[in-house]
Image (cartoon, rainbow, N blue to C red):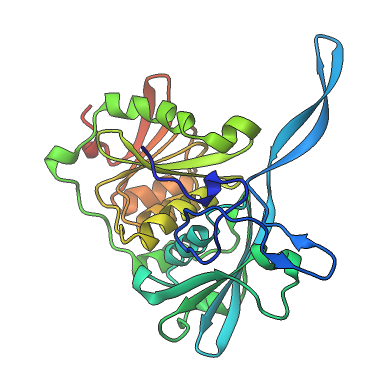
Length: 313
């Protein structure tokens, strides 16, 4: 069975647990109300029209809310990123984002918690995550500004290929016995879709799945942003001491962008598969860094854009 995270629990997790796993109820209390943690889906009322007949019914929407990532070292703290995401696996999202951007490796994070700083309103505390680092704040150009991300486009103004070359080396080829077959790849989209619990209720989420070379699903994360789903997955690996992911496959539910390939490369993932098309920069990155990139993986067909030696065609 794939690992589950707080994205699988509508009410969320105990904020003291950075890796996820325990359900939690209301936690913050103001003078007038209890503050609830937002979940991955939100109930609404709609009017459905089918065959000319209208009826009112309830519907579930994928929740989209901002999340601010703050980093702290000693007495110094900064806001690093504000991203639109689906609540759930928030600590994994923060850890994965920091790893993918080269800000903090797994051993450099001492704690992750929801923020209780005085400048954060009670209703925003579950939308603000503080990551405490073991050493000084990294001397990175990225810390001179705030990352601003959205659920659609990834990190705006993220470092380009030149910066990526400074911190990531090309991947080594997989051993011969770890090559994957077309049959294994054909099964990935179905296994990914079967495990998308929140998508089944809302129809509005992307997914990222981590698979073995035999096609077994290890962990899946969902989010309104495909890049957030990848960050959550990489964050899970980071917080559980599983990086680098050099003998695994990544499968994503949409197209493949530069941001997704950057995050996969930083995590050591040699094979990235998607049901849709890659961008030109995604293909360029895959070819330069020795990654296998599979696109249009559906209905027993796929395109190989890079790294064909890892697939037994």
